[in-house]
Length: 386
Image (cartoon, rainbow, N blue to C red; front, side, top):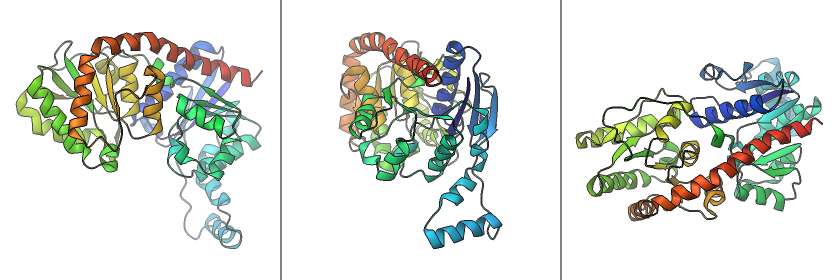
């Protein structure tokens, strides 16, 4: 079996890296003779992932103005309102790689949350045209994200694996039959043992992750998180470890967390983890934390899967759906509307501390179930080729 993973933005997003690593590992462990290839927008960021058999440049091709392709695109668009030729040319690097695979995995689990995806629609069409199996791997999609065009594209997939119940139920309601519930592959990600930095407090360090994406959606969240830090420093003996998880230009957690580091440096109880760690290493730190508070989904998955009680600063269906599958409620997910409410954040933190033992017990019970679903997704791929 030959697998091509595509729709991957690069491993500067450690969540994307976690998906690639864990998926590759599960495939290698469970499918005899499998080869796994990755098409990446930023292949230079993925070189450290040893489980892969090949990494391709899947970045978009810019259509040069007044070139033959530019004129063809312009004429088709002008006469027929048809942009498909342009999108095929834009995505030609990924399309060229389809022939290496038996199954093509679209692994950008969030891609369908952000409006129409005409480039990926054209890639998907070419996968089917070339007679390959097409799978949407570990996705989350909100009902508010759906459109007729998107639904038509989703119906072309041979298999859609939804990583939480909310997406699964929504897709079933929309009439999509080839959908199954799985666990996010990153629930199975291993951790790397790490050396603890100066100032780390054994059994009483709280991880904190906040993202530019969250602040962009609710400006007041930045001050509310600062108020939460003030509360923790004043009312506990805990150390706070500021934990970046996406280090992309223009979307860099580390840049934002540096501001908190500077503000609270004099307390002696705030640590900033470095930006160069990989997903395994970040999970190594997160696994040693007492609590975690995070905006990045895969940082919170690293915490959940390490049995660390967690508050999610949520901004999409995935946060709510994953929490529902773990706790049968949207437990300790602070919505995007409420994340600027300092009182709400502090109250949620106090409740988490009060319920620490129960939360750890629930995670220890349910995480193996979610991990089993992750592995069942691999078995579903094998069945596609039978």
